[in-house]
Image 1 (cartoon, chains in turn cyan, orange, yellow, purple):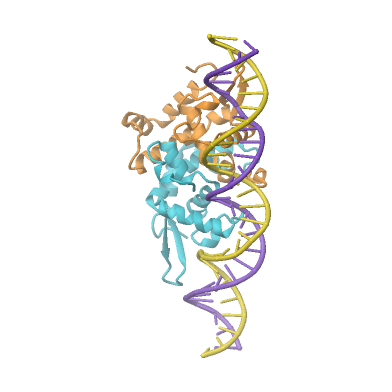
Image 2 (cartoon, chains in turn yellow, brown, cyan, green; image 1 turned 90 degrees about the vertical axis):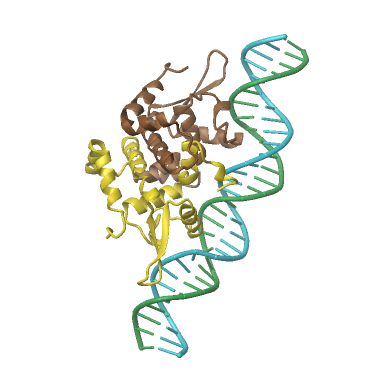
Length: 138
Length: 138
DNA sequence: CACTTGCACTTGCAAATTGCAAGCGCGAGG
DNA sequence: CCTCGCGCTTGCAATTTGCAAGTGCAAGTG
C-alpha cells in the first residue's frame, strides 16, 4: 500500500501485516473462506466497499498469491477463489473469530459455531479448508 | 480509521478488522506480545513508523481496550502493556506466524520456534500469555 | 439486428489519511 | 540554570480513500 511493502518479508508478523493488514482484505478473505463469495459483487456487501478499493484489494491479494482470478467459461465473467496459500489462513481467521466471540459484546457468532471452535478448532479448520478446494463449492 | 467503525461490531471478522486490521497495529501488538516493548520508542523500530501515526495507533489500541497506558512512577514516562483482551490475541498472532513461516520464502522464524508452534501451539500460547501478566516482565 | 440489462470494473475529483521533518514540554542529569 | 533524551504534537505535501458517474462487454429481448 505504501512504498516498499516488498521489503516486508522476514519478520512473520510484518509479512502477515503486509499481506492482510487491512480491514478490506480481511473482510474479502472472510467472504471467500466462509461465505462462498466468488464474484466481484459478492465481496464486503454488508460493509459497503467502494468499488475502486475493492478492485485494488483484489489485485493486491492476487499478486500476493492469496487468491486466484479465473474466467468462468459459462459466461465470461471472473471467478475469484482462494489459493492454497489463501486457504491456509483459515486457522488464523478462526483464531480471530474466537477472539471476537469472546470480546465483542455484540458478537453474532452462533453458539454452536463457537462451541465447535472451542472444542476442536483444527478439525473445524480442516473441514472448512477442504470444502474450499476446487469444485467442492455450492 | 474511517467513519463509523463503531458499527463494525457483530461479524467477528469485521470486528477484528476494525480492531487490528492495520499493519501498524499488528506490528505494535507483535512488539508488545513478543518483543517486550513497553515504551513509545520501542515500537515498530525496524519498520520505521512515523511518530504521529504511532501515537494515533496507540490511542486507537487503547480505546479499543487492547492496551493500557500507565505512567511509570520511577520517571514519569508512559508504559504500554497488553490488557487481557490484548493478550488474548496471542493465539491469532501465532497462527499468523505459522502461516508466514510456511509462505514467506524469506522468513526469519527460527526453526525451533516453528517446531514448538507446530507441535503444541496452545502450550506455547499459554506460556507467552502468562509471561505477559503484570510484573512478570524483564 | 438494434436495444436494454447486469456485471465488472475504471475514472474523476474532493476529502481524509499518511509520511516526513521540525518543534515543544517535561523530568533527570550535570 | 542549562542541556539532553524521550514522548509526543504540529505543519504541510504526497498518497490513499470514498463517492458518484461512466465504460465495456456478454447475454437476453423483440
